[in-house]
Image 1 (cartoon, helix red, strand yellow):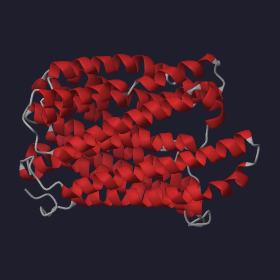
Image 2: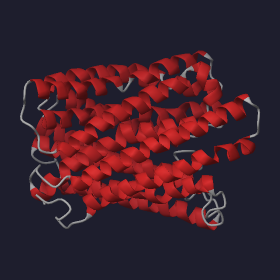
Image 3: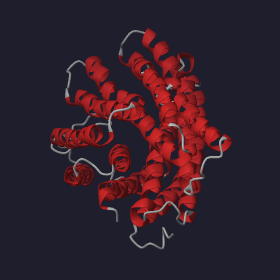
Length: 450
């Protein structure tokens, strides 16, 4: 294994392992509890399973972002500023995530809440000691990345946007560490973490990583990629910040926020989609050297398309004020969330993983891509099936509950068929995640053979 790539490899495997927990374990349990409400009820309640499922998503993406950044910057500069810091970064992250998940498991199994194990705030349930641990881990990561860029690569549009996104990743997390007694004030800044992470700084990180990949896969001119990144950064400045408004209306802020948020939220993914399509067009038109790793191209193209559909189209449809008054808090939100998160970020991380793994293990881009293709199609079909199932459930929920006036529990019986379909497609997608994890984590070269 290439010594300069060890840190990136460890992060990739850990990210895949947490993704496996998120989908194959807690995702399937939560989907099963929609179909059979008593399933594991006395062991792990739905509330705790949901906490695991969402927090594993965040932990998997953070580990994936770190691994992708470390690996691609090591390629750009020859090596990282400090492999020792990267290694320490990794083990501190594993320790923090492991302790947090064990704390959740204790609360779930004992049915006893403790502030030692959870802060109790939705989506950012991690206890305060874990918050500070994450701050330390992130600062170490930022220092190592900053010094790598400064001393070994140099500043340009791509590294600048990447550093801006990573800096925002740390900065906006701090707003989740302050509690306000006034609920409106508390949720106002709570969305600075939940929304401005996902639709702000994460978009910048994803854009920079996509740019680095496109330069390698398609011979995309760096100057052209940088222009797209500047457009993306400009849109994030407006859409990422103003887009928060489609949440603000529901916490007691002025009505105009809903219209502003609904319009601007849909524009963010557009530059990424156009950038990737332009890279493919240029590569085809100018007959540039064909990169042998077709699997990564599948994940890149699939990622930006699902990103645009999930975050852009699906997000825009339900944030329109005329629609959102009926759909807010229904299964349509879950449908949007699943396709947006997986398309926007998970598929990107998997793309970088499949780009890096053969190079790390064998020093080549030419490898057996069959298992990775199976993982791609199984996960994609499973994802789309889940999203369509949740959309069907949302249609029943909107018309029978929100418009028809039936109670929440009465409507659940009519939604059952869609919950069954969601479970089936979720199980199918989980199989794809298992294939991906085994492809990445098993040391035997027969899975990735030149």
